[in-house]
Structures are given as structure tokens and as C-alpha cells.
Length: 248
Image 1: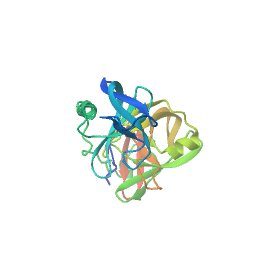
Image 2: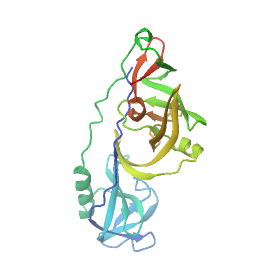
Image 3: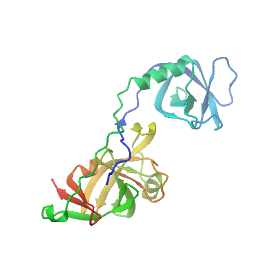
Image 4: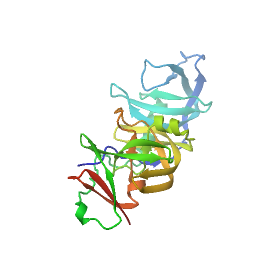
């Protein structure tokens, strides 16, 4: 059973000097050379304003639109945050060069969770029931000792991810915003912190996590990454459908 969907790598925002200017949505959008700023990577979404030459912007993330075209999430000097479409404008070329200059890890090479037999594990090993959803392995976790959620085991994820729904129920406060690399491209996410994350009897306290809706499957509330799994020796007993965790 392969237990990986995507690789997530946190990296802080950069603020290079990219020549552009942000103006309000009510300003002169017909200005020569102005670039529309949209609320989503889609030209049919709400127009937030325009960018004109002469002022710095902060690149935040990049992604691909529905038609395969490139889009950049930026923040203007005046505080307008939105999406601009990649085109032949000098501003978008500079932003494109910025993202191309950043190191990107390979998201196609993933590590499976090793299969083990329950008779081979050391004393004190914790067994957690696993639900199989297609090729994915799901475990039920307890967050902040209050609510439960279903997280996909992902040895390719450096950080644990939970959905915005779970974060809202837990009333988690955002600590920062980051750009992360996924199989679908770079996206902007929020980081937060859990007081406790418990899987069976295995518990990790004060864990920094990512808040992001990576899956549309309502059965999956996030990813259990190596920031948790890496603290244990772990394996899957495929016959009994359990995750085995033992202290390092």
C-alpha cells in the first residue's frame, strides 16, 4: 500500500523588487499596460484592481488555471492581494523568473510505508486501525484532545496538514502564511499550531501544522506527515490493516 499523495515543502515569502503598481478596483483599469488583479486564478472571477508599472509587488505563489495557463498570486504595495495572469508583460516575466529561480523538490518520488508483520514488532508498539480508501491509508487522529479527524498517511509530506474546517472547529489562530510546493504547483497556505496530536496512544505536543484543503474527498481531513511519523519506527500490517508505531 502506498501512503503518499503529495510533497509539501514550507518556504517563507520572498519580497523581490518587481516593478509594478497596485491601484484600487475603482481606479482606471483601462490604463495602458495595466494588469488586472483577480480574486481567483480565473478571468471570470471578481476584479480587485490593476497593476501598473512603477511600484514593487511581493510574489506569493504560482499555480495553473483551468485552461493550463500560468497565474501568480501577488500582493501590491498598497495591500491588494490577488491573482494576475502570466503573459508578455515585463512585470509577469520578472515574477515568473523569481519562481523559476527557487529550488523545487521532486514531488513524483514518494516513499511507501514499509509492510511489517505484527509478530515482528518490538514490545510497546502501538497498533492503530487503518481505513483503506483506494490506494490511500487513513487513520483517525485526535486534535487538541477535543475532536477527531481522518488523516491520510503521507511519508512524502514533511508537515502534517489539516483542513480549514478542522482548523475552524478548533479555533486555531494563524501563525504565518507560507508558499508550499504540491503536485498541483505552488499554493499559499496558513500555518498554525496544535497543542496536541494523538494517533492511538502515540501523542506529539506543540506541533506546527499547515492549514490547507488539499483534498475534495469528504472522508479525508488532511495529511499525517513526517513531522509526526518520523518520531517513531513505523510500518503497516497489511493483513490486519493496522499502522504500527514504536518509539525510536
